[in-house]
Length: 142
Image 1: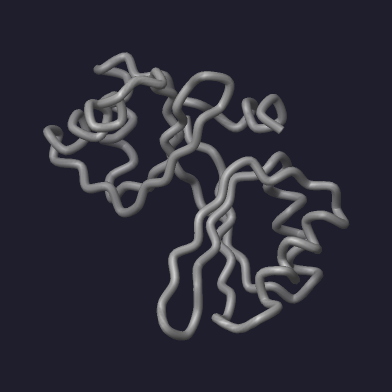
Image 2 (image 1 turned 90 degrees about the vertical axis):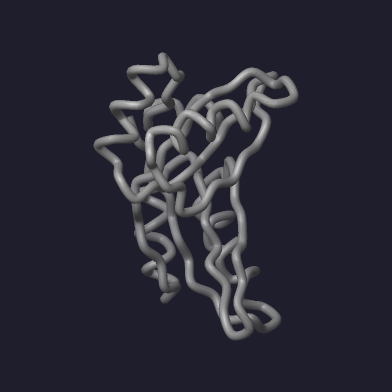
């Protein structure tokens, strides 16, 4: 019910992001979605890709500081307010969302998020009949 996400720690200086992107390019790994959260000294580049385990290994070989974690991915209709409705379901259940990013894919919205209570999130997803995306979808998306 979760998908793997890479979190890559990069310094805020010229050339650090391209090292990551080049390593993925050379390995022929497709980036599906990504976001960068930055501070004054470094950024966290979070990404969903076609082959997360292989990407993790390739980045490690390139001496890139990378971690794998599980995040939730749910599909919503591409209509105004659908993201708000989905997030509200978790909020009303008392589940905090640590971070969230989204993208459109084939006419559907995809919300990627991390929460403080994975077990409860699964329960809320099931109870509200939300369409959860699992790891098998990654190769289809790429």
